[in-house]
Length: 408
Image (cartoon, rainbow, N blue to C red; front, side, top):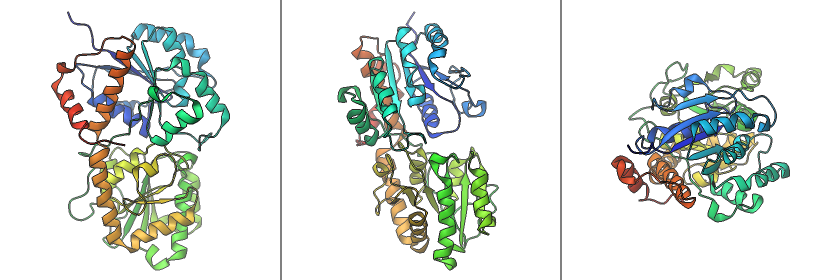
């Protein structure tokens, strides 16, 4: 009887709607079930609706219900859980889950991998000494680091002191079968009050939290009306997502007298269809690792306006495949949006160039191949068994396809 496939336990703070979590879903769904098993441990809670995106029935999802404060109080529970699950790899993601590498080490987990996906509002630029010190403290317990951008890779090397040979930079991938341009004219978005041919729809997708800065986009929409009233009259704004700043954002727009030109869609499961119903995508974040939504918008054939933060400049070449503006600048956002609205030929040219970049460099096939290679190399380095590659031809084909174009 053959040994079971190696188990990878993915540890996150919360498993719900988000780019980080969506990346895990894509990875789990596409890695060979004959070669790898998966479990997901959320330190706090799990969204049952979001967890249903996992297509494999054998994936166990475990919510610990962690209380506020340091994770050390939950170390005994995690130790027992890791002993019970007996994983080959524990893969933590972002600072909020990094502490879990200690009970994984104590439980004898052969490989501990930590992913850096970006920063939060407490440290939007990665400059807080305390957080760098925390990362340094846990270095002995981590076998390999996976930053999602070269920006984060440089941070780990230069600010945290991680040896380059312990780092495997891997970009997010986007499902280009789901996220693709519309055929013909712009399709109507289900439930959206806008869709007249003369209307120009600007949209964003993401959590309505401070780190994503939805207020900056709302102010930019107001400012665009002041700068060019005739042009802005045709513009409509779409917010997809929910969060603490939804009410304040709505109030700002209503006080400006343009609340009827904005649609708050809330959380939606049909993001690909919504993307195809937009004319322009905007991401006003204060910090990003590598944005899934930017990649999805690029794959959908949309011109993109984004802030020049984190890994955004690794996705977009401003003036060629989109437009980058300074963070927290509603004036710059407004002018960039108006530029695309006024110059549709440039908008189309940038959108087509961006779509080609996604197809060449940011496919899901490439992402899965890179993660599989990182898992295999790290297991081999510690002397743990690596599942034979010839057990699943489909994954071998994916790995081969992934090596055709370099993502860096």
